[in-house]
Amino acid sequence: MKPVPAYSMKWLKALMLSPGVLFALAYLFLWNATNLYLDHAFRGKLDRAFNAVAGSRYRLTIGALGTGSDFSTVTLEHLELIAVDTRSSGQPRRIRVDKLDISCPDIGLLMVRPSKAEAASMLVSKALLNRCAEGITSMDHQAGPAPADRSDLAYRVCQ
Image (cartoon, rainbow, N blue to C red; front, side):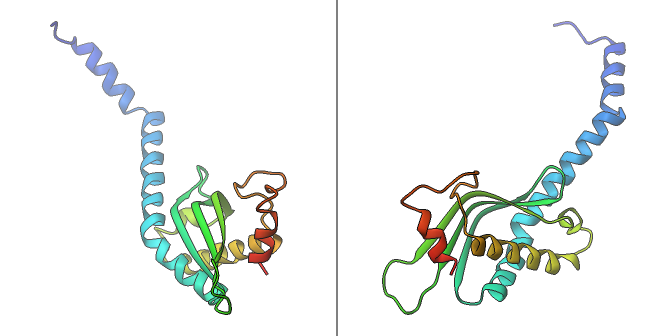
């Protein structure tokens, strides 16, 4: 195997230190760090805020939390909203959503400004309940009517 010429190593070093590559690496680092923060630290705050907003009417289960590529949306994946009805002993009513994006402009600043986390968690919680109150038209966050066997489920759960 031939050794790599010295000028090739200089070009590779210049490419790796170029502003475009450095910016892309910094962005990927920040995006991954924000997603880790949301999935671990922000999840507990969101659970507490949702319980405060919804009371004991609903129980929320979230598979994964993340942010959009522009740091202005919270992405909730594998979301399940369960209506807690203490009067009936039947099967609890559930809404399942594969992916839901909620606008939250301060989500990129939460790691630098932890004081914004409480306000952001309340904003996301209220948006979740508003989606429920409006009636989720589709279980997979797509435009159009819900399947016939689930169309009244979203309405009943959100009452």
